[in-house]
Length: 540
Image (cartoon, rainbow, N blue to C red; front, side):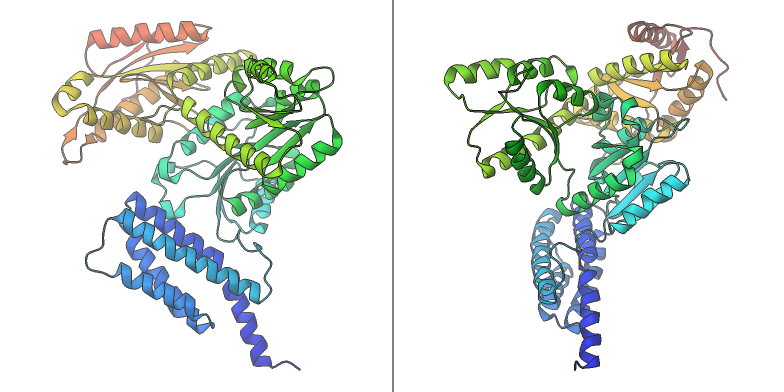
């Protein structure tokens, strides 16, 4: 017969270890805050290590106390080295703590990896409804600390230690455009979530636009609760969005084997038995990598690759061929068709999984670099113009109006000449952040080029554009750029505005007319707004 005191102590130790992943997650977030220069990160870390140092020995784990007390003592030094060195040292100690917790968990029979999800944060953005409650409940069941909001605040104002690991956007009819919200979160620097998920009707989602805005996954509304729970569990386990692989393989035995290997490596696999099915899947899917056999019925692998490369959405998507014909001539033909790599049969499991996972991750990051301006994090020129084209098509189908703003910084050359080009870059970055915090979540902001910016204002007319233009100018007036020396630089801008369909019905003509209006504003004087059509009453 067991001793009641021993049973009680065992249960307490079990509860203590179940909470371990939350403690480790908070320590790691504080380390990120320390690297980012947050003022209170050191004190927060010292407090967390202090609590661990006291609790470890109390529950029968003296090694936990020893490591934690050593970390606290290190942080209490009068002269700490550079924060990066401190963070590197403490990161090693946190890894040691994780090893001790894992070993202790195995000793008392906790399932391997069974508590790794605990302590992760999720933010669900959407209207207050029963559906949102179901989504939130599903995330809570996976161990996420979930909060909800109807609209998102300014992501850059979120503390690094409170950053959501997962942002879920619920796309509802009549709600603000979720792409603007996704864009704001994906360009939020250190507080960017590990993953951004959109829940909506997959047949209505523009997947090119979703990629450009930083959305990592699109989940159908009718499968949201089940698929999101699975996605969240994988995210918590591996720490980044699972790569999406389109497998095109006619042999069912080989397809099943490859699919099993990749799913064990935490990839999400969509299988098609032939090229025609793959083309249909690509209408709905935006995979991170295409893995295809060269021998396919009806539409062979090389022909599929050529068709894929003609689609602008997949110009950067890696394509790997599985082939039994690997002569130099065969490889040259495949490269000409758009292939990036070859795997000869019989396929080696370790090589396949490492190649697919690494190429998919690299492709995802490359696409993000292609769509974003390197300095400001805003949409770059090409993506902004593609977004404008999309907005024209959407407005035409749905009978909506919108406005396009061209914005130019007054006398920017003088800033560069007086303070230097590095200061000029800091001013542009400051302007970008002011625009992001002032504009609506649904507005799309891009760097048009140099010191010029472009803004697409969905669902508005010239009067609405006048209101926002005034808000942007006022925000810049009240928030001057500040140099590291403490010196402030006043920033003023000129704006040119054109609206759809009142002024023009094509993207090219809107840009031209907004540019003409901007030229008139600059010619008239500093800090001016000009409209292509009749000027609405500007708010005072």
